[in-house]
Image (spheres, rainbow, N blue to C red):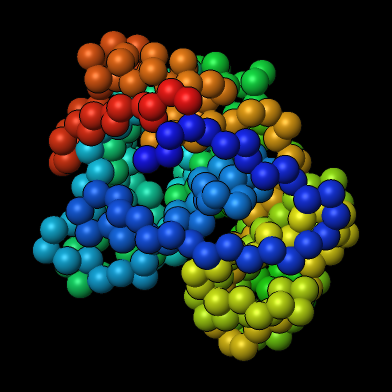
Amino acid sequence: MRARFPLPPPPAAGPVLETTTARAAHVGPGGGVRRYLPHPKRRLIGAWCFVDHFGPAVVGETPLAVGPHPHMGLQTVTWLISGQILHRDSLGTEQRICAGEVNWMTAGRGISHAEDGLSPPGALLHGVQLWVALPEAARHMPPAFVHDPAPPRFAVEDAEVTLIAGRLGEHSGRVPTHSPLLGADLRLPRGGSATLPLDREDEHGVIVLEGSAELAGQPLAPGTLLYLGRQRASLSVSSAPGARLLLLGGRPLEEPVLVWWNWVFRDRAEIEQATVAWNTGGGGFGTVEGARGARIPAPAPPPAR
Ligand code: MN
């Protein structure tokens, strides 16, 4: 564990092509993932502060079972390409999460939830779990859960776009965001190319979910995050048939965001407080009924500097 919190690298002022390699991580039984953010060299892309890509993996005899655990200061966005997960939370939400649907959970001042795989053994589980850091004005808001069964879908030249979050060109997602944000699933089923409009004030990054592609002339395959910096009015994408990408972007969050375990805070004292609260059953995190997995205790905060 890290003994202190180094300052995150600042957003690039202009366009860059910076690559970082995902780390292997584990989430619950059978949950091997590629973790792109946070990364020592790049902590944030806009307000996106956590990017996990899981699968495609064949579901085994032991299904995914992430037991009750808390979140604070963030929103989670779950995007499945295949498979099904059952989400339960302390608000009483019980939502089947299916491919092509967007699910936003706002932790705000505190929520707890659990995720159980619903796919039978032999099925494929494939998707991404994303976190958005909430800005100061929103991070203490009440928790909420929003299910969007039909996010905006449109074509940009050869790319089929699903807008998971925020804005792309004249298109807007249905769920309002607390800072300017972009999350888009891009598919090029027949290959080809597309030029996507970007907001010059925002920073952007891309990962490949399936196949491989070229972004701004740079080849990219799964396992590498391509950070694009700012001051780009557009992004050119080209690929062979079957590529699938995730484009993330947003206005740089000029706040000292700390990501530790399932928390997004501003200082170490907040981590200590939340850790004690969760581990002693306090803090207003509520309870999650019916989860398959056991309640997950919070790890000790990192040693003070
Ligand atoms: Mn969670």
